[in-house]
Amino acid sequence: MARVLEHVATVGDAPSCGDVDARELCRSMRESVPEHGTDIESLLGPLFDEWVPRSFGTPHPGYLAFIPGGGLFPSALADLIADTTNRFTGVWQAAPALVQLEANVLDWIRDWMQFPETSRGLLTTGGSMANLTAVVCAREKLLGDDIGAGVIYTSSQVHLCVTKAARLAGIRAHRVRQLPVDAQFRMRIDGPGGLVETLAADRAAGSKPFLLVSSAGTTNTGAVDPLDRAADVAEAEGLWHHIDGAYGGFFHMVPELRPLLAGLSRADSLALDPHKGLFLPYGTGALLVRDGEDLRAAHADTAGYLPAPPDSEFYDPSQYGPELSRDFRGLRVWLPVKLYGAARLRAAVAEKRCLALHAAQRLADVPGLVMDAPPQLSLFAFHLTWPGASRAEENAATSALVERVTARGRVMITGCVVEMGAAPRRLARVCVLSFRTRAMHVDQAIEDISAEAAEILAAVRGSSA
Ligand SMILES: Cc1ncc(COP(=O)(O)O)c(C=O)c1O
Image (cartoon, rainbow, N blue to C red; front, side, top):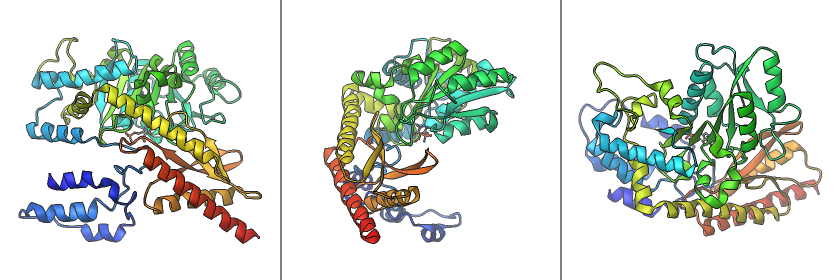
């Protein structure tokens, strides 16, 4: 506990990204199984002093990379309690009151997302598992045994876990349509190559469209697909509409921000990541399914050695998901929400968006910096340019910008590659979502990005003079 507390207290003092060039380190760590025990101090020493620091600084206040996680400490406390008491929460009968806490958490999430009372949900280990469960659920309901003809529609910007989920659910890659996007990286629904046109062509060819997956915040640029229009098409065409809200879903907690996600609450299912937008430690995802019966029908099962599932008034996780034995992950959501209250969490989510808007506004004025994707939620993406630059030169300069900003050690940013025009474009991106990120850290990001951009552009000009 002393080590943990010291770590939390000093997390912002370390570099924003540790030295992850660690092939030699990893080779040196290989070990045979210990026949006898070891004292704890000699185990914790290298763990905290050498191995933890050799990593991305995910809990660092300057972590603006990928989609930041959080790691609210009460969740760690909840895990300690859950693992110490080690009660079995796979079936309701084994720990009814503890499972009820999990059901409460799912009801809270349902209300934040404005899903109806018919909904049921599942806490998963992350967004990938929530998306997979949704794909299986839609497949079960709309394809039954006729899996081969089923077609899934999504955009070129969808998270890789969705195409992976399709594969795992038996939908082959040539039956997943990754539709083009508009200038703001949102799924094209109407017009050439869009959803409506592609659907019609597939139907004419005898395929069986069954699932539309839109994104409430893509990982690359934070784009929110036109969820309302997507819902209209799904409704008219009899498709299951699943929304991947792993990044953006929790912005719907904040009533003033709901218009940014208009249509979200009309989905048939919604994947969320409390370990992103609710600031919890990695290992907590969630799925909501509008008609809870659909989720149950895909999973319900029991065995002669198990207690009979309860009547529908009570929630039994094993009837709504693939797992039986599982960690008691409800507590790591329940405890922080009870301790802090929803109002504080909502305010923190709203603050992250304000910080991103502020940063994007300032960076848009930096000479040579092009804002390709202004923030819709709390993520924006940009690249460097200068007169006469080729796409390859711009890409190299933008990659250098990402590396050099992170090497300064105060903030960590990452990039992505998107198709733009004829050639791939490398973008730098900033995502503000950690509960530890405050105005001073965003100002540091603005300073470091501006300074490195100026140096890179000066060098380019110098070499072409
Ligand atoms: C939009 C989106 N969907 C899904 C995922 C996958 O979630 P997880 O990493 O929790 O499995 C991510 C992860 O970053 C994401 O950003």
